Image (spheres, one colour):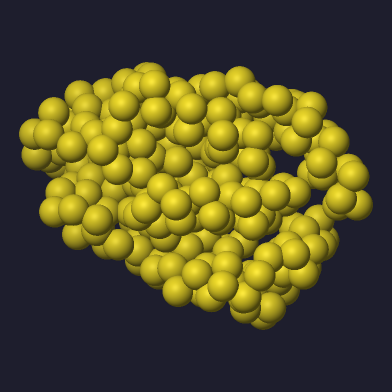
Length: 243
């Protein structure tokens, strides 16, 4: 099967629609969403409804959790917290219940698993940035392939037969037998790798092939919506610099 894998939409409708248009052109069998559907952006409700209509396999992100669990906001910076409070006031009860019921970690099929931030304790929202953090988390993965988000930065970590872990700097990969992989497709709605274009990945579970993709979207429109909504200006301006 071919899976379109997206993460960290963050209420950015323009980015999401551009990504979905591209994955429709490529072709896929199922959509995977690695959490943080809401937060930061001006169209949280619309993004939730699109993910629901697409029948995606989705996990809960920390911003999704913060909408329905105010205690999570204590760990957020002032801009993220303000956006979550704004979001809570603008999505309906059914959408809140859907976010609340999202799992933290699942295995949609029998050869890979997904989470938002980490595997040891998914609700702790630990970041995986480097091979050292990845190596620690590999021991908690049930399968040899895992997909995660949270950092907003595309990454592939590979663990060899001796347990050594390295980050692979390549745009696509054919996975090696016996090796383990931890892959972040990057962010749809708020990339942080200095590339403003929306990021996503395509995974072929039969050929064990993964490829990164980037697509342009109407970033100026997304920025205007954030400003018009009265959300913090920094949430708008960071979109055009990809950070």
